[in-house]
Amino acid sequence: MPPGRLRTRLRVRLAAAAAAVASTWRNPDLRRAEMSFAGAWTAEWAFSVGIGVFAFRHGGAKAVGIVAVLRMLPAAVAAPALTPYADRWRRERVLATVCVIRAIATGVAALLVGVTGAVFAVYALAVGAAVAAVPFRPVHSALLPSLCRTPYELASANMVRGLLDSVSTLVGAALAALLLSHAGLGAVFGAAAGAVLLSAVPLLRVRPERATRAAVSEAAGRRAAGLAGAMATGSRAILHDNDLMVLVGLAGIETVVRGALNVFLVVVAIEVIGSGEAGVGTLTGAVGAGAVAGSIATSLLVGSRRLARWFGLGVALWGLPLALLAIHPSKPLALALLAVIGIGNALVDIGLFTLIARLTADDVLAQVFGALESVAAIGVAVGSLSAPLLIAFFGVRGALAVIGLAAPAAVALCWLRLRALDSDMTHRDSEIELLRAVSLFAPLPLPAVEQLAQVLEPVSHCAGDTVFAQGDVGDRYYVIVEGNAEVGNGADGVAVLGPGEGFGEIALLRSRPRTATVRARTDLRLMALSGVNFTSVVSSYGSSNAAATLYVDGLLARYSPD
Image 1: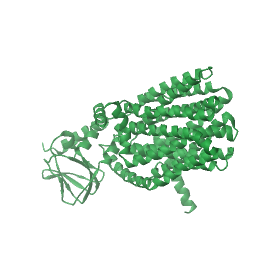
Image 2: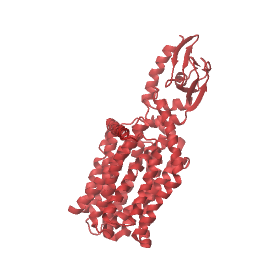
Image 3: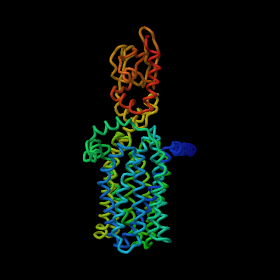
Image 4: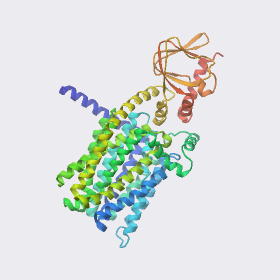
């Protein structure tokens, strides 16, 4: 490619990346939700470094792994148990409550960390804080789509969150390293408590539009009855969708590597490269630094039609650096390779959370993300428990190689399915763009439009055909893809409709016969929605219902013969 053309394409990509960040910043609710995430995740990483060092002081590498398991296994149960409430209650309020509970548990741990004989109390509080933190990411992931209008905006929001996740990893780890060097573990825990408490504040002003309470309750009732049924809803949704199974399965393997990395960071820093306790924070910070660079790079992927494949590459990059580190575990190499893992983390975030949000119905979205969190918790626990055993059996280098090669091998097996998923989502994007051009659907949040796009049915008519006649029973709503349609009332033509325009809403929204006849003026290619799908979505949101009422009143005045 000529250098001039390459520079032009790069400028276009950079402009698109800047626009992606700007689109998130211009949306007040998205901006507040992202600020809350940044505070909560900074606290999480600082606390993770602190509790890892605390455990190592009191029991070595085995204690680090055991504490990680104790923190993750209750989370595996808590995620499906707690997230159903986020699909029934206001998600932003659930998040604020989670932040307050975490702040209390972490703050008490800060007070006890230096108390003789309080080791197990600190461990218990760490477990409590971990359980309280479980709903945060899945509920936050389910909240973001309801604040967006287009797939582009959702990908942008996930890209920005990935960047904030990366910055939080870096800042949290760096803060922990600094406080460990100058103030001690109590200060690390105290800073984490303060940060997570402050993260609740922006959520108090987030106001997403959700379906009416009646619609939410009806959907919840259809999905499951009782807590036991609700806990299984997310898992059932995943098991019934092959694409979700592939995404969650690869994410589970990535979290096994993540759990092992929690142990490797401590062991490599203290026992292999001799960096001491503060070196744990330094190595963790290298992951964060790479993730920051990767997140900036993923801003170029917001408009990409290959998010599934980029996600797969990100999973592979979680493992390959560990396998390479096994060759020569020196400090410079460790820092460089851990930064590559951070890049992989950024790729996983933008692909995984965007794709799952788009493949899942909104009324169970938090539960699906909760099931993902449960898988992640189990994966981290397995990785954290396996790493010390593998180190004991194979040595540090052997353990790094075994864990590191698992992720790229799994991605290779799933590569064809990831390519097919990218193709499917590209087709869906065109359907969403078609629906967004219709004024009735413009006010709807992205999950509602995704729901409609999934049930669109193609319909064709030749020039002169009658699509429906005045007085017919209304059972469908139509959007024109190609061609022109003539709307007639009696013998008179009333209007000519073209691509991007819809018709058939009056009979559906007012429960009355068709008020006009629609004929194909040219060959017509249409997309149709059943009456049930159309009315259930449009009537469930206050903004679209109000817009539809005004629109239909205007059409009735225009088309009615009297």
